[in-house]
Image 1: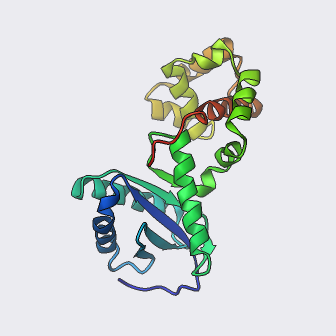
Image 2: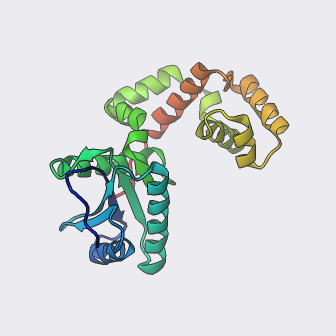
Length: 226
């Protein structure tokens, strides 16, 4: 494998397999994937497999790499995989901190986004903040601010519409395209959401209110990751 200058800053991509007995096979597979790429350096310890990534590699490229690796692991060694990507750290003096950061992103990510497998630490700041509050206090906050039928019984179509709008940064065109609906249909749905829930999703304050209600409720669910 091509080596890079370890004085550079880096991100650390931590790979957590569903079967810890496959760590050796996971390391070998990852090493083979990046054998000639000097922007990625695969390493392993007794308990971890991780990849050092040059900080000049874009976030989009890192995501694409993680997705390809996840699919390769699924198809070749038949196990599931969770991937945590740390923020940028100086190498090699903060590898332990980077490992902890990537591990924490997986731990928190699987609580709030159970269907996802790839988590960037930098995208989970709000969720990390919520986890600093005790579960008892989180429940009290939710019950006081959001506990009502309108928040607890949002049906699936409404939920998907709101989540898609948030994921697309309130861009109506991109949201309609992702949901495979006409823009006028999306406008109608948003009008219904405002009528039923009192949420104007074109207003940043209402968007933040909804997001906080969802995150608080999700925080009561424990991570399934062992």
